[in-house]
Image 1: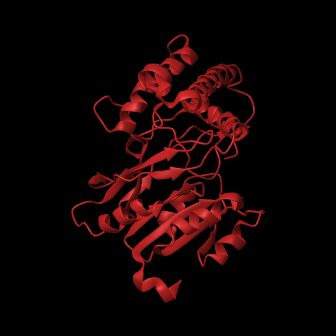
Image 2: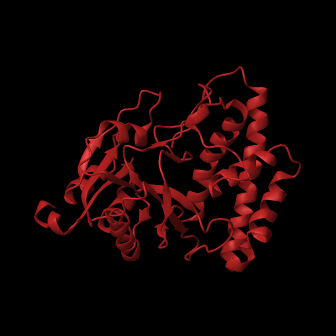
Amino acid sequence: MSEQSGTRAPLSVLVPVKNEAANLRDCLASISFAQEIVVVDSASTDGTQAIAEMASAQIVQFIWNRKFPRKKNWALENIHWQHEWVLIVDADERITPELQREICEAIRRPDVDGFYVNRRFWFLDGWINHCGYFPSWNLRLFRHRLGRYEQIEIGDTVLSGDNEVHEHVLLNGRAGYLAAPMEHYAFPDIATFVEKHNRYSTWEAASEEFHQPAGARTLRATPFGTAIERKRWLKKLTMRAPFRPSLRFLYHYIWKQGFRDGYRGFVLCRLLASYERMIVVKEREFRKTRNGGCLTLNQ
C-alpha cells in the first residue's frame, strides 16, 4: 500500500464491520484509491480480519460498552486519522470509478466541508431506480473533525447494537452533493431482506415508543429541511395514521413510482408494507410490556 500511496488520494476511509467476509473483499477493492483504509471490527469470527489484512488495511477492534459512542462515532473520535477527509463505507457498498473521480476532486475544494453521496440499491438481480429508494442521499464524505453521527436515545429497553445503522451524520459546516451513485448490495436475497427488516422494525418501534429527545445531537423532523429531515417529518406525521401498511405501499408504489421498477418494484413495495406492519404490531407490544425485560436487537 505504501509503495503506491503517492498516486492514491489523500483520503481516509472508515469501514465498520462484523462478520463481513462475504462482502469485504469487493468493498476494499473499490476503495483502494484511498491512502488510508481503517477497518473497525467487532470481533468477527468468519475470516473478516484475514481479508482486511490481505488488503493491507489497518484493523482496529471495537469493544462496545453498551453506551455512547457507538462504533462509527467512536472511530471518528479515537482514531488518529492521517487525512482531513474521511469517507464512510459499509462492507456491502461499492465505490464506482465515476464516484472515485468525483471524490478525488471534491476533497480539494476549500469551500465545502462535506458531501452527500447517493446510493443505488441492488434488489432481485437489478437496480432499484424508484420506490423512494433512489435517490437515497447520505452524508458520507466529510472533514472528520466536523461530522458526528446523531445519537438517537431510546433508553435501556432495546439494545440496538454497537453500530450506527439508522442514524445520520450531523455536519458543522457546508455540505454539497456528488452526482455519481454508490452501489449498495444490502439485500442479496429475500431472506436477507426479511431478516434485516425484522431487526430494523424492532428499532423503529422502540424509537417511536421510547425516544428520548437529544437536542442538537439528532436531526430535526421538518418539512423545510434536507431530504432526510423531510422524510423524518413525514414519518412522524403518519405515525398515528390508520392503515399504515397500506399507506406505505401506496407511498412507495404510487407516489414514489415503484411501479416503474416492474416486478422487483412491486415486490419491494409489498415487502415495505409488511415491514410497516411489523413496526405497528411491535409498537403495540412495547406499549403492553413497557415495564418488562430488555429486548435486544443485534445489528
